[in-house]
Length: 122
Image (tube, rainbow, N blue to C red):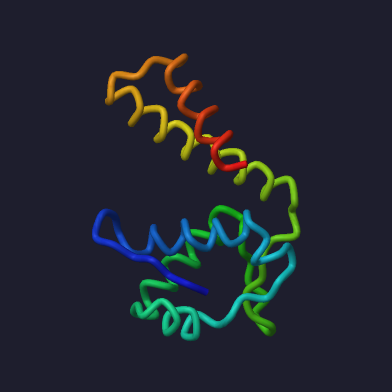
């Protein structure tokens, strides 16, 4: 797993977001066993306590659960994952729209630029 960390926000929150993205995209599937905290921390090159904090957040949100004898697993609740995906996409789109409005673009202009870019990608 590729980890991209920066100084813009706390590292544990970035870890949470990146693991959420892996769940949403299907890299981690419902019911999958996660690597140990130590292994994930080593992959991300962060302190295990930081990764543990990220895991605690994911458990609190219901995306991950712990089986005391077998480790941590991704939730099997596909509705929860679908809801997370919807919220994640909405946040990305809202951020994009905010940036476009800062540039002084109206809705019609934004749609026009999107259509041009989509057509050029075909």
